[in-house]
Length: 258
Length: 360
Image (tube, rainbow over all chains, first blue to last red; front, side, top):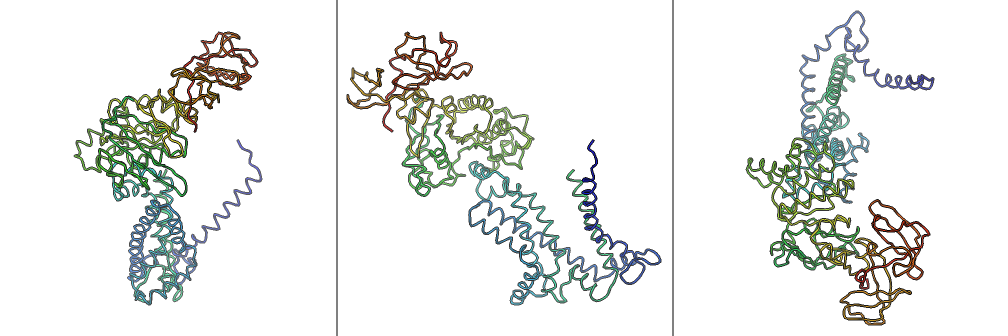
């Protein structure tokens, strides 16, 4: 057996402390969501599910949730289709121009969100896309594209380039080669990209605040406005549900992999 | 040559391919006979892979023409050429089972499902992979993957199979086994094989004809035995097997026998070469054509300087006063002597052992 050195205890404690620092602020929403008061705070006389009830019956909260979900799915689908096509195209070419194109596509990750949002705002005004679903979907698709293309590139990185030659030599056209040989190999990256794209859209707030007014309300925007206008603990209930949902999804993912 | 060139299945005329100032293919002409096992042999950068890629349709020629059955395919896309192709890295489709890999060319051609199933099974059985149909490529060893790749390349019954160093990634023993299998597959199927390799042993053991390339030009071509025994240039004599090179003066000619002298040693060489007396000639002498013996038995006295024991053979470097170091390769059981560094020996050769080379 390995001797337990002071060194090791020090680092293990340190690691757990960092982990706690990361997770505890997330977990604080759980007791707050169960509060029996009508403002944000810890439970006083007992636990209550009233704020969950409020969330699940309130038309505005539900509508904002639904909006975020369907926008997320549309964005994820669009970004996955476009990002995959882009990545496969670059993989086929794999020349200098495609290298440069890859870098340009990653720029949205590097630019500060506020700058990006300002850009969207100026542009969307001219295009008449302010306060429309199409405007939000377009902006989110642009933001999600780099994530899809990065994960598809990763999936294709180890694919033997000779399989294009093999497929074409065996009688497949470029199009058949792409569909039957390259796309299946890209599938793991596409799935990861889809999930990332959905998450990017689902919790994006900066651009939404810039390019929507009253017509479009997503869940993050609703939470943001809720905190500003009143301090309704329903926000904590929503946050708790989101944390739980994430935990469940992660657990399913981890179980399927093992 | 075993195959008569009455009607070549594939003809390449004046093929030119340049990469910048480099000539990957420099005016290459080549005819391939139906059913032939043709090997393109050369060191890296010799143009052999470029030539194969041009035949397959992956490289556009700058000049020249490729015809298949007398129809021009120079500009045809690869999928129209109907060649099976096998790669060094196997290039199996990673997301498909072995069965689907082999069925791929048939599915692309929209054959009937029953025909696809029959033909796929037939091809897998032919390469002894019938029991692996449901495996994924990554579950197979290199040799097994290459067998599947072969089955896939044959499944649509192409008339020509293009093989790009298919055995180079395998270990030595497996490579030797697969050489036999490829050879027997070739004679069973009657398909034309165009095989690219840098490995001279592979080329010698399998081919009907070897084409030796260097710097984008064909140096020499012929049956393995002809090439090995009658190399025309220093490059060929050195690349295909090993050779001792001797620069000699031509001193006389007697019908087809050329008399040469080099540093105290006389050589009689059988040749149809018409070099003039007084000219220089470069001779190649294969190590296994040299005999090593006790002092005084053979023509020249020499001294052993190094010995390398290889089991069935023994390679000995001997030093002759005038000719310098000579490599001798002899069967260990044949020599009456035990070569060791410092030992005095004599060396000799038969009259037809030497070959006169053209200037490079």
